[in-house]
Length: 474
Ligand code: ADP
Image (cartoon, rainbow, N blue to C red; front, side, top):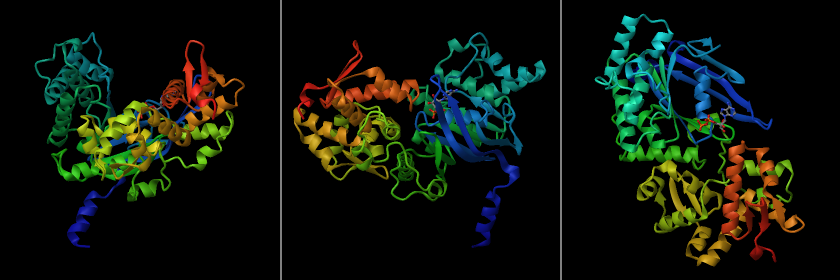
């Protein structure tokens, strides 16, 4: 190794002095309303260092916000420890300030009063408060709006107030929880650039930024390091360095390659796990990992915990059969496959908007995704080419084979005396493994898939699931 390289290494060396936050084996459990225990995330170890922007990337429900709140000292983890500058947290983390997705401004206070609020709580004298607030307001481009009330401001301006309110506290680390998700595309992009500009300015006081996002492109645009969380429960699957030069060009080959790589990690499709992913979780399996045939063939009963476990491990993605057929139409136009980024832009969506459809397609084996490249399978092709009646049959047999919950409901109905069961019964079983809202969502998706495949139907008025007439004879 050359001396120059060694010097670079030692400059980058991680020392206790530049470690801002250290989380070790942190886990979070909650007891749901019905008394069942919900593990939101488990055994996450993570350090935040000076000089970096880190994105925590994961799907909705992976536990990202709860993890951020644990690092912020706003919730106490049920296992593991969080330290700030070497000291274990016993309450709110004194070194961070938080920017919320929903801005969380006080509507009855002016911009300036909103920004001063945290300083007031810290007992900072009025004259100093005013000066610090005006500086922060200037820094984020809000000068002239000091006396405005939140309702007079656009969403983008409100989030600027949210950022100023955090900056004014001069935190060691700025925490941002999906800060741009509530904004329209252009405003969000504009504000991302502002934050990056602030980050690279000479007079910045913050030493690190930690942001939660479900948006892969946003993570690649902003972060020096992307920490990927898998779901059910949340767990660390990769810690990926993003070394692209700034400003980053979303259309460059390198940018798109990084998006594809993170996509592959996030969906468990990485053909070669990254070094980090391997080290952190050799068996990283995500909820949409392909269902093995064995996992459904013995789903022979309504009740056993094993069956429920399979259903939990392979939740139905929130996609409709019609939407999936539409996706296949587009993918089928590309016999050699298409990059997800191109597919997303062909449909004018962002890559992560495609998640449920791509997950559903992967679960049913009508597409395969490798390293961000999606291709139609033989099964997909026969569904795509079939007429409507035949398409329903193909879908039904794929769902029966690869979607445990659909299989389970069909099987239970077939075993019941008159081919009928109460929906509440299914919901209660689902609630044993899912939070209430999720149980309802899973039930609704299963009914939609069952109906389309003419496997079973659901009458909401009578709360009755029944085998479809067309499916009774077999
Ligand atoms: P993400 O930010 O990745 O979308 P969240 O951290 O918001 O995920 O939530 C993950 C899961 O934790 C959700 O299912 C949510 O309902 C659950 N959860 C979060 N906080 C609580 C709580 N206080 N009580 C019960 N469940 C909770």
